[in-house]
Length: 401
Image 1 (tube, one colour):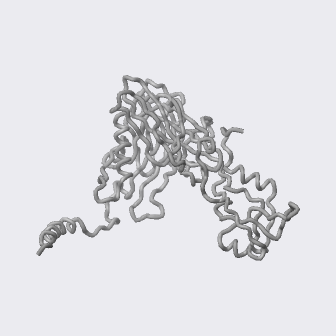
Image 2 (image 1 turned 120 degrees about the vertical axis):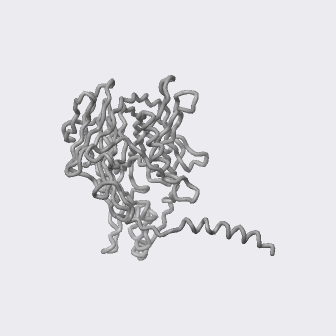
Image 3 (image 1 turned 90 degrees about the vertical axis):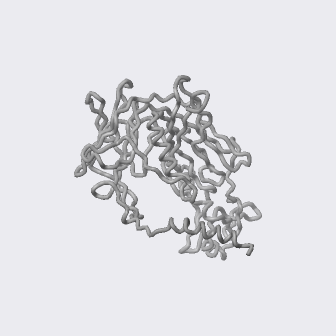
């Protein structure tokens, strides 16, 4: 009898839980657009710089392998209220020497428009023409003047297991600051240990790396771009100051802490409408999946179809100037080190090399004889990840000598 209250509670709650369960077929979900895909526009109009815009389509929910489709053959241009046009030029027609170019992995599909001479006192919009689909325009927007970045800094957690990259900036005291940041990372992507030797499995022997091969390993560079939405507003603050806004975090086990690291940050100002758009996008893309998480809401951008006014277009075109900041980090000086355990070298005699290789080990150097020479019958081995290079890009042009 003492469980009666509990059963009454369960019988009251179960219908509520069960009423939320119904059969769902994602293939039946309607997607705006006659072809079942929505246009996605990514980019901003940059006054005094290079405007870069990517166009893609969303695809149906069951297209797991290719969740988007990149658009080729489109025309993209910027125009002001008087009808003056800044057209998209081939990439070779101008040089972007800022070193802060932000590209998608499909950079060759990015439309680039030279807007370095865009007057700051006008209003501008982005215009798009796509064959067999129609024309699209963003709303006219004035240029948001972005204040300079005061500093880009690096701080370390109290346990020295994580580093934080942060931006500080301030604007006019009479204005509310609404900011968005994107960044590019570059780092010396050398392996944890540059090996002197390599194992040749087919011949069951070890061979020396040449000096040139080892130098090439040391000069590999990694590159990555920001993917999340990083925004902040000073509306609820006493002053228009953003202090140590975190833009990236790196833990001590990351490959990026093995050598010199650089983060290049771009800061842009947003108007009130643009900030609301990105704030809604951030809420819809983070913290979802739990029973009590906020449900996704419709996010309205400022791009519309001229040809089909009822069509939904994803994206928001901001018009602003850019400010840049860059920081080089020497991880030993800031107090964070790689803790991957790669200095745990195990010596294996020659008759165990094949077994060690099959177990995921790789040789790094020969043993030594009592007289200090090479002992080619024994070698030091480490985990394969310790000598793995992975991404190997060329050294950036701005990298210090």
